[in-house]
Image 1: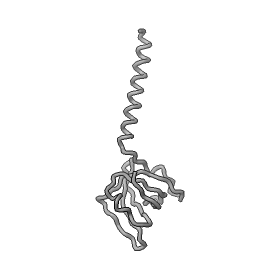
Image 2: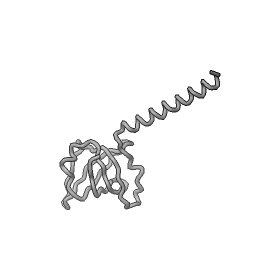
Image 3: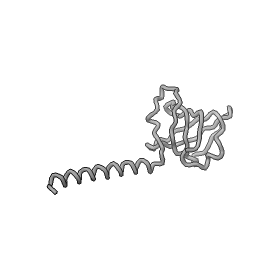
Image 4: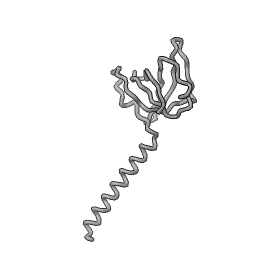
Length: 115
């Protein structure tokens, strides 16, 4: 083999290993996403997978809704307002999917489901 061919093969293998490491790192984050992908001026509902912060608790509102906290892939912790009761079976989940839109300082969820 020529020296040039060896360098090309080593470069290809190195790039593949970098890609593999990058893919494994973001897959290991359990599929969470980021609130940075939401436009705070839009009321269009989008889905986002986040980590439920059970230790921060749940606060009931007089209108039958509930507020709770979640953390996205970037580590941003955001308050979530859900206009109905939080499903009891999901309180044991680590990762949940929210459907709703961002208002800047909080996330208005219309639906919550398991990952």
